[in-house]
Length: 226
Image (cartoon, rainbow, N blue to C red):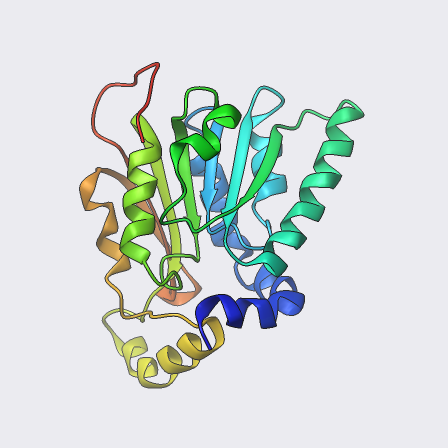
């Protein structure tokens, strides 16, 4: 079964499992992604768990775009977007939110241009997507390209446990996590900030989850190019 087929299968139970387990790293990711400006893109947004807190954090002047390629996951994200739209219409200080069905490694500037204004994002968030995406390097490249100079990349993902006694859990932990998430935890995800200027990193769940943020080199500009 391919990645899209797997997430089509587990979409109904994804939130039940992942919301409580990854609540802390998601909060950190939202805090970082919302601190750099009002235009935020989340690649591999899944069921949209991050969309409501991001919409609240960037506020009414913000524009938030979620991208995912699995229809059953995205339908759940769309339900969240509709609730946010109703709350915004009632006066809640929430960003405008849209979701887009597309491969995060291939989404083009034209698909997001009207939503983000000039086509450049202040921040791009990829949470629990790079260990899963078939073309994970393409997703990362797209994230860097859609950021404006000075824009912020935020990564949250799983990885094998690091040095120390915890590493002895990896022969069991890694295969189980790879199976349940249709993932490849062996990918060198923790060093993927190298293209940018590293800002900060944190670990959660004993080191099984990492969060990292980096800035795209260059001075902030009014116009960005994907």
